[in-house]
Image 1 (cartoon, rainbow, N blue to C red):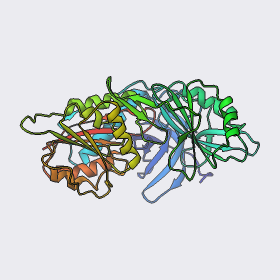
Image 2 (image 1 turned 60 degrees about the vertical axis):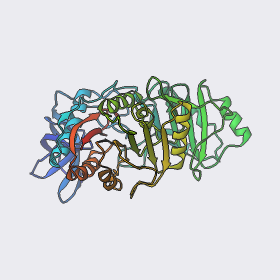
Image 3 (image 1 turned 90 degrees about the horizontal axis):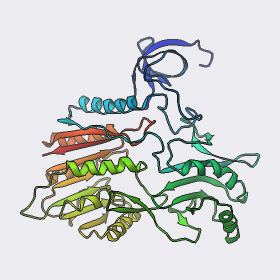
Length: 432
């Protein structure tokens, strides 16, 4: 379709991935780089039965919300998709996307929570970048182009927290001296409150001499070096140090983290999210032991703060290494009323350790949602259910199960966890 003549249309909406929606001939056309209220010149590059896909050639009439992207790599880099949209308008778009999804399912909340927001730049404390040695021996480090496997080499990234941007810029010159026999595939950067980790995935582990040479040229003073091969499941620290990486959940709770394990990438929004959860929780039980169940609990992100408001908190997680980390985090923070259990939540019917009345169920599932646990949640008749979502469509699917069981949506809102992307984080409170 490269030879097709350009077309012109007005943009009437944005879809979930941030593309503009036009209807030049009545048929929906999803256009990269277009914003609502604009008239754009575009060319189609893909035609399907019910919609076309296209990209902007020229903005004929710009939206008042259009801004100049800050990063020189936008939009080739696949990391950000909405840098051309003013930040406040991004948040409004995400809130509206959530409300539209809820309305279509007849699940409108009693209260629309104010969107949680934080600084739009320098927010991301963890990033995974692709690494490849080019034919001329140089090292390419960057994100994958949107919709392809090609690496977009980057020299700057404005969404990363300090000092990660400087590390990204220095990685190629450092890695180019690695032995050619070590095939590099990925590097993860993790900025904790007390140190930074550089975690490399490669074809083999470096020898003692190779490792010493790498460390001698590693100029970042607080950087830890972690490593794993493509056949290993977890990173291991190889620089000889043993200091743990810590991030603050609240003023009094620290979470120990490692490269490769899940951690909320936006530390400020995560703290606000925890505060919001604690504000929404209503524990009025006095005549018996109060119980909260945290499904998909990870390493304790919500379980540990909830322990201050319930007599007993039970965290359930499918990955053994995360449950072990959650137990360790509880011990380090002197929290004694939590229990963590390994269990597959894809088709969950409960467990014997959870007896009696459950007051709160909190769940923070992956993008695929939590269909496998919804029947059990209904059976608990918990007074409150808090659902944290990174994919509103699966959240809506799951919450319809609760609505059919008599739960009402008391409140819902979005969290701007990933500024300049179309990813939507949402929270919903349902009450019996």
